[in-house]
Structure formats: C-alpha cells, structure tokens
Image (tube, rainbow, N blue to C red; front, side, top):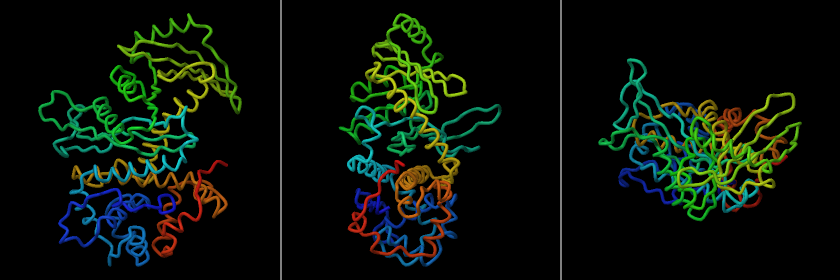
Length: 426
C-alpha cells in the first residue's frame, strides 16, 4: 500500500472517529486496515478475521500498515461496532483521495479519451433478503413471495488495460416513506452525478453508460458539467429516435469509414450528427465489427463528442467498448473473485454500506498490484502469470503476512519514493 500511496494513512483524509474517545482501545486506522485485510486476503466472511489473522506476525504487520501499536487483534464485533457508527461519507473520503492521487500522479493520462477520464456508470444488486432487512429496502414480488433487496449505482474509472476502479457509490434505497414510487437507477444517477461533480469539479470526465441513461435529463447534466458521454443506443429504448437515425444514416452515405484492426478484425463505421432527444442533441455512431472467422456484431452509441472519420475508431474502441469493464472487471470480479460482494457482511444498514466501500478500496489496491510492473521486476512475471490473478495471489499474501514481518523501513515514505511502480505495458 505504501508504495502506491506514500501518504496512505486513512486519517489524513479527515475521517472523524464517531466513538467515545475515552473508551477507544483500537484506533480507527487499525480497524480500517483490518477491514481492508478482510477483502484483500479474500477471507470471505467477517468471522474469518478471528482465525486467519490470529498470529504474532500478522498483528505486527497490521500495526505497521496502520501506523498504530495495539497489543492484540480486534474481534470482528469491534470492527462491526465502528462501522455501525461511522457515516459512509467518511470512508468515501479515502476512496476519493485515492482517485485524486492517481490523477495527480498522471499515471492515468495514457488512458484518457481526447483528454477526458473515462468513468462508467451502472447499477448492480448488492444484498437480497427473504424478510424485511430495514426500512430502506427495495421490494419485488415474485409469485407469492416478496423479496427485500438493496442495489447500488457505481461510478468506476475504467481503462483500456482492464481496470475498473470505484470512484463513488450511490446506494439505491427507499429513504422517503411518503414516496409513491421506489428509488431507481435514474434517480440515483442524478444524485451520483451531483456528487461526482462536487468531488472532481475541474476534472474532464466522459461518462460511459448503457441505454437507460441516453435520456434528456442525463444529457443535460453532461452538457452543463462539460462532460463527455458515450451511451449505448438501443432500438427498444427510443424507437422513434431509432427510426429517425436509420433514415438519416441512409441520407448520409459520406459518413462512412472502414478500418482493419489487429488479428483480422474488420470494422465498418457510420454516423449521424445532431439527433434530437428532447431538447438535447446527440451524435450517433454505429460500428459493425467482424472478427476473423466470426459473425458480425453491431454496436450503436449516442455521444456528444465530435464524430468524424478521424475519431470514430478511438470513440468505439477506446471509448464505447470499455463500458463493459464495469461489468466484467468490476461487478463480476467482485461477486465471483473472492470478494463476496453479495454476501451480507452485516445486517446493519450503515455497517453494510461501509463494508461495501472497504471492498471497493481493496479491489482498487488489488488492481494496482495486478496491473503494475512490481511483480515483473521482482518475480519475472505479472500477477496473472505467477499466481493466476489476484485471487490466486491472496492465499500467498495471507500466509506471508501471517508468518513474515514486513520490515519497518519498507513502509517509510522515503523508501517508497526510492523506486517507481508503473503500469505494466509489456
């Protein structure tokens, strides 16, 4: 951690400890580090902290990572007590601070699209219960059974080398008892974009989204914030606009380009400018891709970026196609890659949110390890080559921390600055 973030100390981002200061035994930094270990080491459940982390070396390592000096491992209930009281907005400061540092280090510059950082937004299921979990539960009827569930809307920074780093989370929940309709992705999107602008007021962003967000209100938000967007355009979502696009496409035969890509990939592009969606306008880009010895796939997007012969290849391959990173490298990996996103680490509403944010922080650190060149320098191969990925790395990392003490000097900022870890481009 210290090598990627030399200033890594959660309290430096101003987290306020909500507990009684006269009764604190375990400092907040230690408990946050212990919570991160739950996900970094792929323990799978909160109770495993009692078994997997109980060694003298692990206690020393957690203390050194947290900058503390506690004398024993904290019980999982102690971590739970903190996370019940800690407002999730406090942990969000750590996440935003990490992203800001990555931007300031300029290590993401090569992954910008026409100068803009790519941020994919999408929703996913988080928790499901057969009985009412809390007053904010969403509900869904399935036959005679009612399901009580929670969803999240994620904004993830995505890159062409396969990263999907969480930037912000908006929890989709019924907080207004007088509301006639349940909370939904679109309502959450309006809240999320407001927070995103407040957290990164000057950062040029380009939102990548599915067809749900190709709507007048979202396009207006992007225009007012001076953000770019590339959103999937589907016939079923906007049937009248779709028919209008197909008619305009046939009237614009000059808006065509063919591109031959690597490994025999053949792409044919067509585009239309200024399609009206309410009071907003969007440019429509279509890509028909035919890989070698495979069927043709059709992709269509709406975007406010400049669409012309010189930009269509980048817009499609370095922009629109990357939306899937939030699905694969994002949600799918968090659900099936050892993080157990859909596991109820707590039934307490605030604690469950904090566990979710800790999971996102751990996933970000894992991706930096996975995509960095540290393992190639030290072990002659990437994490994927040596361990089969971060899930394969977790058991080795867990056992190393259990029985080998990290040298104290290795975690000093001066030591971290003595060498650089770059993204592996080999």
